Length: 148
Image (tube, rainbow, N blue to C red; front, side):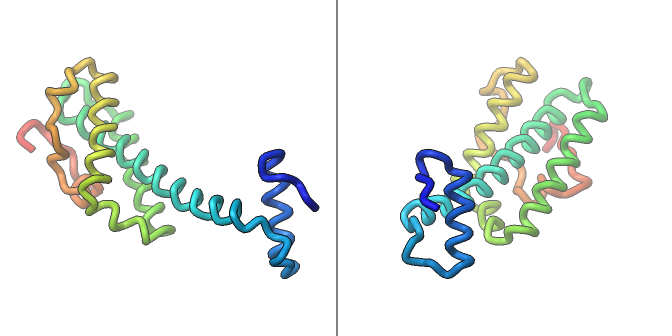
């Protein structure tokens, strides 16, 4: 054992796991282990934020382009809702994100940007802040129209 973190992260990770299982704690690369553990949490947060942005983008498209509504959009909305729900079940510590104004604003900004690119609707035509509580956006029967 002795692969450098910088040389081959996969080999390094396997070696670190073996050291942990063997109880050889003094041989562990603690600094990099701590970074990797933190990165796991950040990765989970990024996945949730990305899925929420895709969901919100499709809800915007649904609302602002009623003549273009199709089964593909509906399928994407359903898929994102299901995957967000699964992510929250597997990682309940992410649930507070759904109430965090800064987190919601970031996901909303990404959703507006994506919707503007995909629809050719000016970014500024979309609401500046998300008009739906996250709980509502995640409901299976929620599909906005222009009155929402």
